[in-house]
Amino acid sequence: MNDYVCHIATLWFEYSVQLRFAVMTKFLVAAYAAIFLSLASHNLSMSIPNRVSDSFRGA
Image 1 (spheres, rainbow, N blue to C red):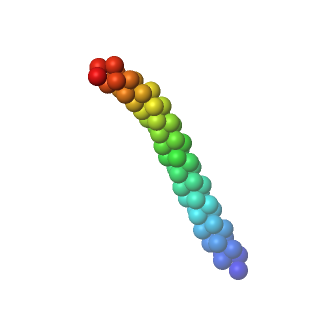
Image 2 (cartoon, rainbow, N blue to C red; image 1 turned 180 degrees about the horizontal axis):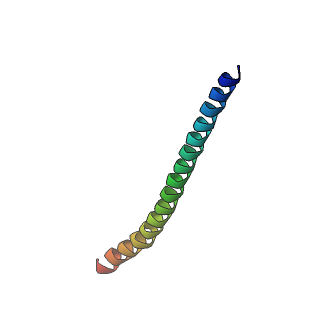
Image 3 (cartoon, rainbow, N blue to C red; image 1 turned 90 degrees about the horizontal axis):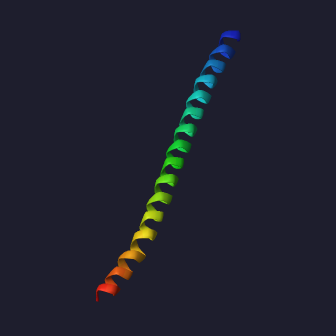
């Protein structure tokens, strides 16, 4: 009985560590993606009106 409980506790500990690591990895990836997307959309929103106004000026 005691060995069984120890085995379950070890499995649960390994599983919780892996789960925490996976959640942290997903969180970091999501944070990096959000930062990258916000920077990219900011650059796009800055460059597109300038290009449009330049093309109107050139025309």
